[in-house]
Length: 315
Ligand code: SF4
Ligand code: SF4
Image 1 (cartoon, rainbow, N blue to C red):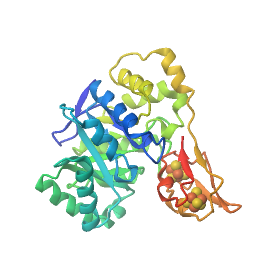
Image 2: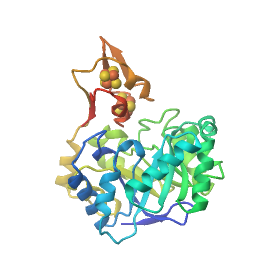
Image 3: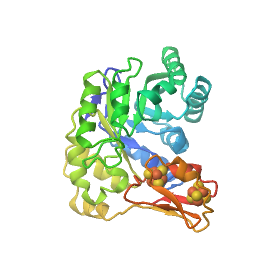
């Protein structure tokens, strides 16, 4: 498994980062032992980098996976908090849930531009203070926007940027793949540690798995790539691919058959909260129920977190 320096942070990460979103309650909803077992097996294959977020509900898997593990593990979490008090609650909640004295990387979740970063500046100031206190080693943003990457690249307080990037630009909200690649290059040139997300376009590129992975591995400015993994087969494929070994062809074919989609249960009462939450504009209310436009949906599952009826799942 190759390892890279994450910008100027002094943190060395495996190029394959274990993305926890897809195993958690917003998506597959694996039981604790199974989810933790998957993370642990990836760690034992050389992965040392885990990506999570407050909203994912995945801290218990990580805590369980790390029990008795003595190797170094780098953990990122993220929060939507916009003020000092909210961010302090998020960070302390993360430390408590993970039973750690510090978390390596803490990000503002889903920033869009210089404007939204400015709107979260109280939270940034808390994170700067937390970094000085040793509660966090590096701070920054995650984003689905080219403008978010460009803006964060010029913020001296930020160490890390976590952008969406994939071969066909699926899910990039304000431009194409070339625009995002250019922004990533700029961020890396500014000394930021950049690691990518959604290299499979939230599942849309699974039928083109090898092509999508070859593309993301060719983006040299990415210190790492977070990939959601829900099964031993996915871990095996990704560890081989990121390590420069040709994955087993039969295994790759099996993985390519695994289509993903968003399901809305019959009992949806059309309250519209999911529509408000979806920043991709992929949901609408029609006939008194939520309906998804699968061409716009990036299968993030974030809408599931606001549904009071537990109607939404991404499988
Ligand atoms: S939040 Fe849930 S209940 Fe409300 S419209 Fe969306 S799916 Fe239906
Ligand atoms: S519909 Fe839900 S899963 Fe799809 S992009 Fe919107 S928030 Fe994400």
